[in-house]
Image 1 (tube, rainbow, N blue to C red):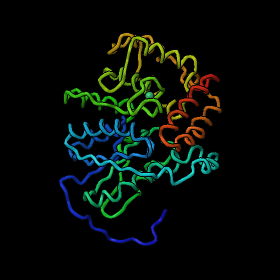
Image 2 (image 1 turned 45 degrees about the horizontal axis):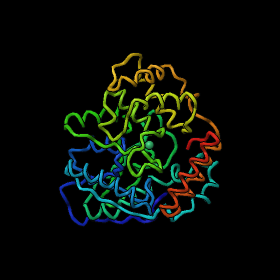
Image 3 (image 1 turned 180 degrees about the vertical axis):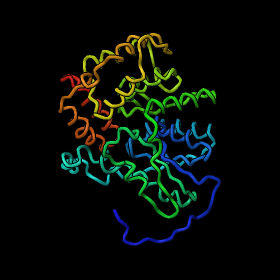
Image 4 (image 1 turned 45 degrees about the vertical axis):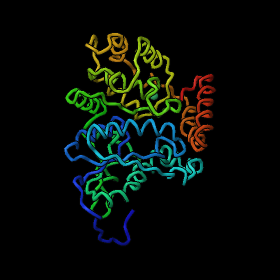
Length: 334
Ligand SMILES: [Zn+2]
């Protein structure tokens, strides 16, 4: 994208904070907040991105969590609601799947779109630095809609965009969050779950929740202090699901599991001693062999569920849960 005409714009007024960041409350954005906490960034939460535009129930839960974090930090929280995902037909756009090696939202849209939603606010707040947290570290940069070659080129008015946290892997970010929690004696809620049945909190069962639970254990922090439910069955179940290849996860998640493996060693001291069997197994695990490669799962995850997401929230939830149950009958974990 190249601008045809450039204009000079001034911010409406200058406030104490000249920083702003996209804040979902997940591992990446929490780490970005911690790295820039001295700037007291304005936290922007988008309703209509990972939580659907019509899903007011889950949004209220997520917003409450984000607001309590903002209250603790003294940062301003700005919720933005947008139907931007409804303006496109992801079903039609799925015809580009082969060309862009994935779905439109992940490969083309989310970075530009969410940064664009911040633009009016940056004028009002007098923002000069806008951060979007990187999902990946510099050693695993896959082509996607948020990338150092793209984000750093996005500019308007006095605003410069930075893709933040490239030098940290996900485990290092968890260590940063754990350390922040300890130093400030506060339980930090990590919102990592996109499971439709999670009601805006963490389900503590899905692949992503399980991966984050394992990451926190390896970092020496109790996952229960970060918004996850852990019981005596948790770690045995995670090991079984990996061993039985019950989870479908993409190349990026595979990379994250491999990264966790580099932090694991036999007979580590862990917050939950029940986690030892899983961690001992993980030390030598063949991660590539621990995920199912059934293509049908990709179709259900990337095509069927996005269509159902576009339904109003009640029907969407019921339909997603139904599809998940039917998929499981055919050993398809979604
Ligand atoms: Zn989950």
